[in-house]
Length: 461
Image (cartoon, rainbow, N blue to C red):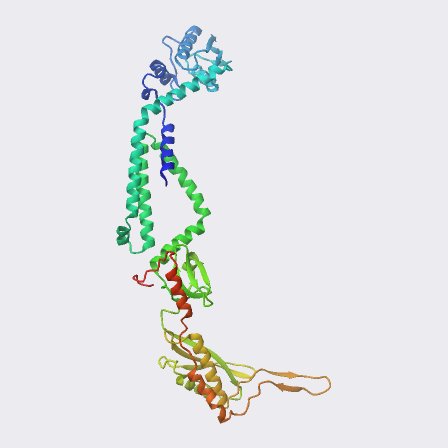
């Protein structure tokens, strides 16, 4: 809300205020105003009585002529009465005066019908006279009301300054609400309420509170229409507020939001900014984040990896699981608690699928590197112990002869002792935590001045 539109509203309210003869000393005729108050059909529904019995045409005509002489715009009206039928003739300046004269005649006692032959006067001077009269009256009223208008503007300016000063007191609102986003929202709301209070007082001083009601009513209808039009924007704004209060993650947390994975850079009033594992920026609307499932890998430093290997259908799956689990236990980066394990996943056409599981500390070990090294170590160990890791077997039939079986990946003989160091080499593979993405996030947060609603001093959800 800016001063210029508010000042315009005050002036509009001033012009919309009803003009009365009592507020304009010296303007118009007091007798005319009193007569209009008596006979105006909008003010009373009672029948107009004559000063004597209304049973003769002359009494009716005299009464009507007297009334028309007292009303502005109806003075030229000529009246003739015959057997209770009133005939009106002549010309008037405004079209509304024709029907007004007829309504007045119908309210006189003894009138049977009205023949309205009044016409609008086409003379320019006659038509401009009423308009100029009203304009002159309005100008005189403006001059008389200038002091009140000045006082109303001063009141509005004072309330505007007070509201702005309250909104700028960030330390006060921060003490009320530690959440910066909510504190700004409260400060803005208080500022608008103070300015609206000043506007009400100013319009009441000018006698234009009716205009304020009309403005607020129109604003409500327009606001409802705009609300439907910007529903998604409002939804996103409310979601931003709730996320700033809930704090579901911290900066640099490794999260999965829906089907999007990355590290959190910041939370703004419009979107959550992630850096994907490929090093790209990803902006997700807060309304989507608020409604989505959030998987946070950083909250628990211990993370489990798993992988599947198939052994030959003729091999003992229990012995293969024991050998693979023992190999995982000897890997330095696999945690002893929770202990690694294995389970039989399924029996296929030509192999038995085994799933091996192990736990690592993400603060020291990279999950992807650890899983890769574990697969390599278990595979080599199983092959060295004589377990086959077969591939699918295909049977081909030729028209000229009997079926011919061709097997791919037939289990090889036990590995010779010379290959033993290959299994041991997995123990020395580099599985240290990869900090490249984390460092990029820190650099991005340090170099950007964009707002961030994440507060490390608030409890995380």
